[in-house]
Amino acid sequence: MTAIPAPTLAPPRTRWWRTRATRRFMRHKLAMVGMAMLAVLVLACAFGPYLLPYDSLQIDMRARFAPPLTGDHYFGTDPLGRDLAARLFEAGRISLLVGLFAMLLSTLVGATVGVVAGYRGGWIGSALMRLVDAFLAFPSIFLVLALAAVFQPSPVMITLIIALTSWMEVSRIVEAEVRSLREREFVLAGRMLGLGGMHIMFREILPNAMGPIIVAATLTVARAILTEAYISFLGYGIQPPLPSWGNMLNGAQQYLESAPWLAIVPGVAITMAVTSFNFIGDGLRDALDVRSDPR
Image 1 (cartoon, rainbow, N blue to C red):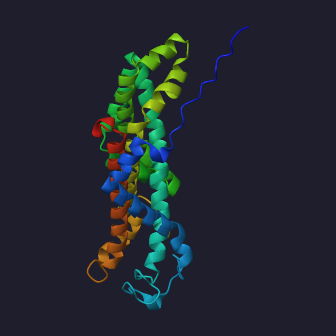
Image 2: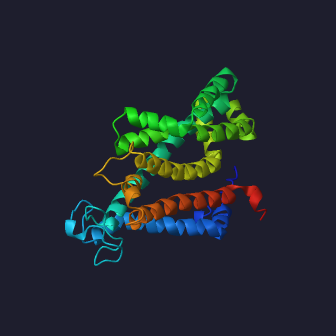
Image 3: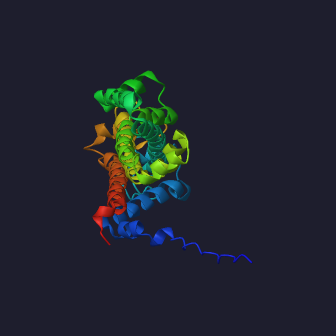
């Protein structure tokens, strides 16, 4: 009679909030500050317009240049009497969404190019990385401005332009990481089992390279928000009457002395958004680096 082997119990799956990387991230003070600032911005932009008594396009010429904390105008009004808080939150939705989707697209393109170049190597990897070098040879801001001047500026087009000019850094990071992983034991085992190159690249290597990709993606959001604000400030981005933090600064530059809050309010919002993502990126980098904490 053949003995039936006793079933083995699988090791318990660790909850994400109990992992060592999560604990390191939670101990990172600047990352927690960034999370708090980002939460305030997201909640304000998501629910703020519904809590205010004024619409972002509502014009009241009698309330022109009202300073902050005047009646129900918590952040004051602009030269047309429009409520600055309503415009700020509406613009925040656009700027944050542009940054988020630009990050997703640029990360997708950059990670794909980096994985293929790092794993294949040879002339394929060299050709792809020379393509990356060619894109990096052009100053990114001039390339963005040239594309924005050619195409009709809209939130979707601005998102595509920013994404197509910011994927190169991600591809360099991924390519270097994949080159260090392609000779590891699990990759060699996959080849011995007859797994295809696509399976090894995107099912085996890519998940093991997610740490640097997540950090790069977080920092890309900050750069995308700053780029959108920059090109909108120069008049090539989001066009009025649709508000964005950049074109709000554009309209405020001639009133810096008489109504400084018109520039201070969107400037503080841009600073909070960019700083919060940079702080979160620094925290993720330290949390996902196993060498930063030997415990």
